Length: 485
Image 1 (cartoon, rainbow, N blue to C red):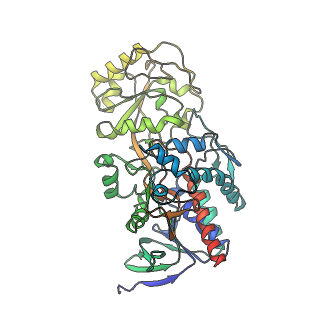
Image 2: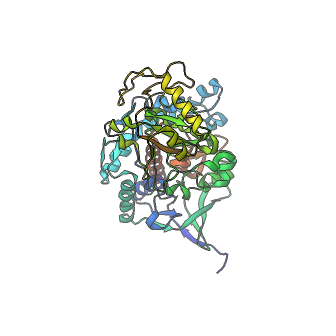
Image 3: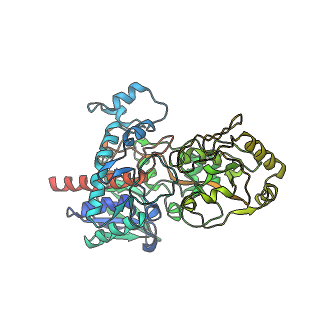
């Protein structure tokens, strides 16, 4: 063995084999380019997070995004920012530092919305199928289109097309650093395969996810309490932030909220992918002290589960319990809201349930008594916002507030899972990574979770669309440049 790296030349080098990376690879290969795809995982586990997600798409039809798509992204597209700078960033003639500000560019959002239906149509042409299937959400504010078979189906369709086009796959291969020429353009990347080194030459698309699988980066950006988080699925452990780091190392502009992540409520006892617990609006959330700490039902579950889950993360040990009485089992299709493979704790009395939960029995019994006394006695309408709320209780419960009175009583533990991190790279409309001076870095693109876009509240069901759109745009842009040359 030597330290000499094997040299390999391609028209496009893609780091990551999820929907973002495969979209870039296939769109470029369809134009005749010689493409390499690097994947840290073995072939059987390829696809990263994409392999495990249901891949909800925020679309009202296959031809149109949801009505609130652009508005929601824009409203959650920056931190505290000078409004004048935000306005200037929307000006096509604005150059320099304003263009590289850490905010979601309004023009980028507009292009994202416009290109989403085209990306869906392209995937349908490759053999993917889409439909409005049942979701985990018993109540929802926005429609969601789903690929039949979820993200794994999209990975398989794209990978099969890539293989048919002769794309070169390099499994168990991790990108480590970018290669630059003397003008600062990216001309390839250095990677490690086992104990050997490889150098791939060509323009690069970074589509290797966020950093939820990297404890050092999680602690640095999210903070020491990130020890109470875990990736939503096994694919998340392959996302260790190399793509973001190597681009920042050469001066790339950052975007997205590095100190935050997309949160989802899951059962900490379960080892299955995405063992979500979305039944909590119909019960009360209890921390380890036996106390309520948040409004469990401020609105539809699809719009508010993230904010509620963040409150769970703030509790002792980063977890809570949802306590339900027997009536929740009469909600039509209630099991859709439970993806955990673990059964609930069940007891005939609140006191016995407290013992099983290992919370102070006196505290839980008092919490339930106070809550029950604050309920109006009005029956709920569980499949719609019903405004059946508590009165004179802090924190209030705004909907579906019925007494916890009918045994047997059930409890599920809940912790916050890290679906993906928000911080990443700033890109333009064709996925080109911007330098901190506002100019594109020649030869460097990004797609998927490696692109930073979200702040505050995640615009639900847009991450897979982001992967599809910007992966495809990157592949097409590289192809257009090769043709022009």
